[in-house]
Length: 302
Image (cartoon, rainbow, N blue to C red; front, side, top):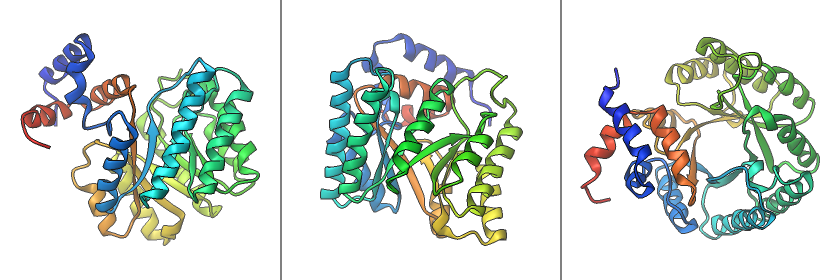
Protein backbone atom coordinates (compact mmCIF):
# COMPACT_ATOMS: atom_id res chain seq x y z
CA UNK A 1 0.00 0.00 0.00
CA UNK A 2 1.36 3.43 -0.97
CA UNK A 3 2.19 5.71 1.95
CA UNK A 4 0.39 9.08 1.64
CA UNK A 5 2.62 12.11 1.03
CA UNK A 6 1.17 13.72 4.17
CA UNK A 7 2.94 11.08 6.29
CA UNK A 8 6.36 12.11 4.97
CA UNK A 9 5.45 15.77 5.41
CA UNK A 10 4.49 15.18 9.04
CA UNK A 11 7.73 13.33 9.76
CA UNK A 12 9.72 16.23 8.28
CA UNK A 13 7.72 18.69 10.41
CA UNK A 14 8.29 16.64 13.57
CA UNK A 15 12.05 16.71 12.99
CA UNK A 16 11.96 20.53 12.97
CA UNK A 17 9.95 20.89 16.18
CA UNK A 18 11.15 20.64 19.82
CA UNK A 19 11.92 17.08 20.95
CA UNK A 20 9.01 16.97 23.40
CA UNK A 21 6.63 17.17 20.43
CA UNK A 22 8.07 13.95 18.99
CA UNK A 23 7.56 11.90 22.15
CA UNK A 24 4.12 10.48 21.23
CA UNK A 25 5.54 9.37 17.88
CA UNK A 26 8.58 7.79 19.56
CA UNK A 27 6.47 5.89 22.09
CA UNK A 28 5.71 2.86 19.86
CA UNK A 29 9.42 2.23 19.29
CA UNK A 30 11.03 2.98 22.66
CA UNK A 31 10.33 1.39 26.05
CA UNK A 32 10.76 4.64 27.96
CA UNK A 33 13.78 6.40 29.40
CA UNK A 34 14.40 4.51 32.65
CA UNK A 35 15.26 0.95 33.65
CA UNK A 36 11.92 0.69 35.46
CA UNK A 37 10.00 1.63 32.31
CA UNK A 38 11.99 -0.91 30.30
CA UNK A 39 11.41 -3.66 32.88
CA UNK A 40 7.66 -2.97 32.80
CA UNK A 41 7.60 -3.35 28.99
CA UNK A 42 9.69 -6.53 29.17
CA UNK A 43 7.22 -8.06 31.65
CA UNK A 44 4.32 -7.37 29.28
CA UNK A 45 6.15 -8.90 26.33
CA UNK A 46 7.15 -11.98 28.35
CA UNK A 47 3.52 -12.43 29.42
CA UNK A 48 2.56 -12.49 25.73
CA UNK A 49 5.11 -15.23 25.07
CA UNK A 50 7.96 -13.19 23.63
CA UNK A 51 11.60 -13.44 24.58
CA UNK A 52 13.33 -10.05 24.81
CA UNK A 53 16.73 -8.46 24.37
CA UNK A 54 17.16 -4.98 25.82
CA UNK A 55 19.46 -2.18 24.69
CA UNK A 56 20.27 1.22 26.20
CA UNK A 57 20.06 3.72 23.36
CA UNK A 58 23.23 5.58 22.45
CA UNK A 59 26.55 5.20 20.68
CA UNK A 60 29.93 6.88 20.18
CA UNK A 61 30.48 7.77 23.83
CA UNK A 62 33.48 10.09 24.19
CA UNK A 63 34.09 10.22 27.96
CA UNK A 64 35.32 7.45 30.26
CA UNK A 65 32.93 8.60 32.97
CA UNK A 66 29.92 8.18 30.67
CA UNK A 67 31.13 4.83 29.31
CA UNK A 68 31.54 3.58 32.88
CA UNK A 69 28.08 4.86 33.82
CA UNK A 70 26.49 2.99 30.90
CA UNK A 71 28.43 -0.13 31.87
CA UNK A 72 27.08 0.10 35.42
CA UNK A 73 23.55 0.47 34.06
CA UNK A 74 23.92 -2.71 32.01
CA UNK A 75 25.18 -4.59 35.07
CA UNK A 76 22.22 -3.28 37.08
CA UNK A 77 19.90 -4.43 34.29
CA UNK A 78 21.18 -8.00 34.62
CA UNK A 79 20.45 -7.92 38.35
CA UNK A 80 16.94 -6.56 37.72
CA UNK A 81 16.25 -9.20 35.04
CA UNK A 82 17.29 -11.96 37.45
CA UNK A 83 15.30 -10.50 40.34
CA UNK A 84 12.15 -10.23 38.22
CA UNK A 85 12.74 -13.68 36.63
CA UNK A 86 12.43 -12.25 33.12
CA UNK A 87 13.19 -13.96 29.80
CA UNK A 88 15.50 -11.20 28.63
CA UNK A 89 19.09 -10.90 27.45
CA UNK A 90 21.13 -7.74 26.77
CA UNK A 91 22.56 -6.18 23.60
CA UNK A 92 25.44 -3.66 23.77
CA UNK A 93 26.98 -1.39 21.14
CA UNK A 94 30.78 -1.29 21.55
CA UNK A 95 31.00 2.46 20.82
CA UNK A 96 28.49 3.07 23.63
CA UNK A 97 30.84 1.60 26.24
CA UNK A 98 34.18 2.96 25.14
CA UNK A 99 35.32 1.76 21.69
CA UNK A 100 35.81 5.35 20.50
CA UNK A 101 37.88 6.09 23.62
CA UNK A 102 40.36 3.20 23.56
CA UNK A 103 40.63 -0.55 23.12
CA UNK A 104 41.46 -0.87 26.83
CA UNK A 105 38.32 1.02 27.84
CA UNK A 106 35.91 -1.02 25.70
CA UNK A 107 37.51 -4.34 26.66
CA UNK A 108 37.35 -3.51 30.36
CA UNK A 109 33.72 -2.45 30.16
CA UNK A 110 32.51 -5.35 28.03
CA UNK A 111 34.46 -7.67 30.33
CA UNK A 112 32.54 -6.28 33.32
CA UNK A 113 29.19 -6.66 31.54
CA UNK A 114 29.96 -10.21 30.42
CA UNK A 115 31.06 -11.18 33.93
CA UNK A 116 27.69 -9.98 35.24
CA UNK A 117 25.90 -11.89 32.45
CA UNK A 118 27.69 -15.07 33.55
CA UNK A 119 27.00 -14.44 37.24
CA UNK A 120 23.28 -14.04 36.55
CA UNK A 121 23.06 -16.94 34.08
CA UNK A 122 22.28 -14.61 31.20
CA UNK A 123 23.58 -13.74 27.73
CA UNK A 124 25.32 -10.75 26.12
CA UNK A 125 24.98 -9.82 22.45
CA UNK A 126 27.69 -7.53 21.02
CA UNK A 127 25.81 -5.39 18.50
CA UNK A 128 27.27 -4.53 15.11
CA UNK A 129 27.48 -0.90 14.06
CA UNK A 130 28.85 0.69 10.86
CA UNK A 131 31.61 -0.91 8.78
CA UNK A 132 34.15 1.46 10.35
CA UNK A 133 34.12 -0.70 13.50
CA UNK A 134 33.34 -4.16 12.06
CA UNK A 135 36.90 -5.44 12.48
CA UNK A 136 37.17 -4.19 16.05
CA UNK A 137 33.75 -5.59 16.98
CA UNK A 138 34.63 -9.04 15.65
CA UNK A 139 37.97 -8.89 17.50
CA UNK A 140 36.15 -8.11 20.75
CA UNK A 141 33.80 -11.04 20.21
CA UNK A 142 36.62 -13.43 19.32
CA UNK A 143 38.53 -12.45 22.45
CA UNK A 144 35.67 -13.06 24.87
CA UNK A 145 34.11 -16.12 23.24
CA UNK A 146 37.32 -18.08 23.86
CA UNK A 147 36.34 -18.38 27.51
CA UNK A 148 32.58 -17.85 27.50
CA UNK A 149 29.49 -19.31 25.86
CA UNK A 150 27.39 -16.44 27.23
CA UNK A 151 28.26 -14.12 24.38
CA UNK A 152 27.31 -13.61 20.72
CA UNK A 153 27.56 -10.96 18.05
CA UNK A 154 25.88 -9.75 14.85
CA UNK A 155 26.71 -10.05 11.15
CA UNK A 156 25.13 -7.97 8.39
CA UNK A 157 23.95 -9.63 5.19
CA UNK A 158 24.48 -6.54 3.03
CA UNK A 159 28.25 -6.37 3.55
CA UNK A 160 30.42 -8.09 0.96
CA UNK A 161 32.86 -9.18 3.67
CA UNK A 162 30.32 -11.08 5.77
CA UNK A 163 30.74 -14.46 4.08
CA UNK A 164 34.47 -14.36 4.87
CA UNK A 165 33.78 -13.22 8.44
CA UNK A 166 31.30 -16.04 8.98
CA UNK A 167 33.66 -18.66 7.56
CA UNK A 168 36.42 -17.44 9.86
CA UNK A 169 34.21 -17.38 12.97
CA UNK A 170 32.68 -20.79 12.19
CA UNK A 171 35.93 -22.56 13.02
CA UNK A 172 34.70 -22.56 16.64
CA UNK A 173 31.34 -22.47 18.42
CA UNK A 174 29.47 -19.24 17.73
CA UNK A 175 26.13 -17.52 18.38
CA UNK A 176 25.23 -15.00 15.67
CA UNK A 177 22.35 -12.65 14.96
CA UNK A 178 21.97 -12.11 11.21
CA UNK A 179 20.41 -8.84 10.07
CA UNK A 180 20.29 -7.11 6.71
CA UNK A 181 22.10 -3.97 7.91
CA UNK A 182 20.84 -0.40 8.31
CA UNK A 183 23.89 1.81 7.81
CA UNK A 184 24.44 3.66 4.54
CA UNK A 185 27.56 1.88 3.33
CA UNK A 186 29.38 2.56 0.02
CA UNK A 187 28.58 0.28 -2.91
CA UNK A 188 32.17 -0.97 -3.11
CA UNK A 189 31.72 -2.80 0.22
CA UNK A 190 27.99 -3.59 0.29
CA UNK A 191 25.15 -5.05 -1.72
CA UNK A 192 22.46 -2.52 -2.64
CA UNK A 193 20.00 -4.84 -4.37
CA UNK A 194 17.33 -6.27 -2.03
CA UNK A 195 17.33 -9.65 -3.76
CA UNK A 196 21.11 -9.95 -3.39
CA UNK A 197 20.88 -9.10 0.30
CA UNK A 198 18.10 -11.65 0.86
CA UNK A 199 20.08 -14.28 -1.05
CA UNK A 200 23.08 -13.61 1.19
CA UNK A 201 20.85 -13.75 4.27
CA UNK A 202 19.52 -17.23 3.40
CA UNK A 203 23.03 -18.42 2.53
CA UNK A 204 24.28 -17.41 5.98
CA UNK A 205 21.26 -18.95 7.73
CA UNK A 206 21.89 -22.27 5.99
CA UNK A 207 25.62 -22.14 6.76
CA UNK A 208 24.91 -21.57 10.46
CA UNK A 209 22.53 -24.54 10.56
CA UNK A 210 24.95 -26.82 8.70
CA UNK A 211 27.63 -25.99 11.26
CA UNK A 212 25.20 -26.58 14.15
CA UNK A 213 25.56 -22.99 15.38
CA UNK A 214 22.74 -20.98 16.96
CA UNK A 215 21.41 -18.18 14.76
CA UNK A 216 18.99 -15.33 15.45
CA UNK A 217 17.07 -14.30 12.31
CA UNK A 218 16.52 -10.56 12.74
CA UNK A 219 14.19 -9.26 10.02
CA UNK A 220 10.82 -7.59 9.43
CA UNK A 221 10.74 -8.71 5.78
CA UNK A 222 7.80 -11.10 5.65
CA UNK A 223 8.84 -12.51 2.28
CA UNK A 224 12.20 -13.39 3.79
CA UNK A 225 10.48 -14.87 6.85
CA UNK A 226 8.37 -17.04 4.50
CA UNK A 227 11.52 -18.28 2.79
CA UNK A 228 13.18 -19.04 6.11
CA UNK A 229 10.14 -20.93 7.42
CA UNK A 230 9.85 -22.99 4.21
CA UNK A 231 13.51 -23.93 4.39
CA UNK A 232 13.31 -24.75 8.11
CA UNK A 233 10.30 -27.02 7.57
CA UNK A 234 11.64 -28.68 4.41
CA UNK A 235 15.03 -29.38 5.96
CA UNK A 236 13.61 -30.19 9.40
CA UNK A 237 15.96 -27.70 11.08
CA UNK A 238 15.92 -28.06 14.87
CA UNK A 239 14.08 -25.23 16.62
CA UNK A 240 16.89 -25.22 19.18
CA UNK A 241 19.21 -23.79 16.51
CA UNK A 242 17.43 -20.51 15.84
CA UNK A 243 14.93 -17.85 16.84
CA UNK A 244 13.25 -14.97 15.03
CA UNK A 245 13.91 -11.41 16.17
CA UNK A 246 12.13 -8.11 15.50
CA UNK A 247 12.35 -4.54 16.75
CA UNK A 248 9.95 -3.34 19.42
CA UNK A 249 7.03 -1.42 17.95
CA UNK A 250 7.43 -2.27 14.28
CA UNK A 251 4.00 -3.46 13.01
CA UNK A 252 4.10 -7.07 11.79
CA UNK A 253 0.38 -7.61 11.08
CA UNK A 254 0.06 -10.60 13.39
CA UNK A 255 3.00 -12.47 11.89
CA UNK A 256 4.95 -12.74 15.15
CA UNK A 257 1.98 -14.25 16.94
CA UNK A 258 1.61 -16.76 14.09
CA UNK A 259 5.27 -17.72 14.37
CA UNK A 260 4.81 -18.41 18.09
CA UNK A 261 1.63 -20.40 17.41
CA UNK A 262 3.71 -22.55 15.06
CA UNK A 263 6.17 -23.25 17.85
CA UNK A 264 8.94 -20.84 16.88
CA UNK A 265 10.79 -18.68 19.41
CA UNK A 266 10.41 -14.93 18.84
CA UNK A 267 12.58 -12.33 20.56
CA UNK A 268 11.79 -8.61 20.61
CA UNK A 269 14.65 -6.10 20.58
CA UNK A 270 13.64 -3.45 23.13
CA UNK A 271 15.56 -0.13 23.22
CA UNK A 272 15.19 2.44 25.97
CA UNK A 273 16.97 5.43 27.45
CA UNK A 274 17.22 9.21 27.28
CA UNK A 275 18.77 9.10 23.78
CA UNK A 276 15.42 8.07 22.28
CA UNK A 277 15.03 10.90 19.76
CA UNK A 278 17.45 10.00 16.95
CA UNK A 279 16.53 6.31 17.11
CA UNK A 280 12.80 7.07 16.90
CA UNK A 281 13.19 9.43 13.96
CA UNK A 282 15.05 6.69 12.07
CA UNK A 283 12.19 4.27 12.75
CA UNK A 284 9.60 6.83 11.59
CA UNK A 285 11.51 7.45 8.36
CA UNK A 286 11.73 3.71 7.74
CA UNK A 287 8.03 3.16 8.43
CA UNK A 288 5.98 6.35 7.74
CA UNK A 289 2.71 4.40 8.11
CA UNK A 290 3.20 4.46 11.89
CA UNK A 291 2.09 8.12 11.81
CA UNK A 292 -1.51 6.99 11.17
CA UNK A 293 -1.36 4.59 14.11
CA UNK A 294 0.04 7.22 16.49
CA UNK A 295 -2.42 9.93 15.45
CA UNK A 296 -5.28 7.50 15.99
CA UNK A 297 -4.11 6.77 19.53
CA UNK A 298 -2.90 10.15 20.75
CA UNK A 299 -6.00 10.82 22.79
CA UNK A 300 -6.63 7.29 24.01
CA UNK A 301 -5.61 5.99 27.41
CA UNK A 302 -2.76 3.49 27.65
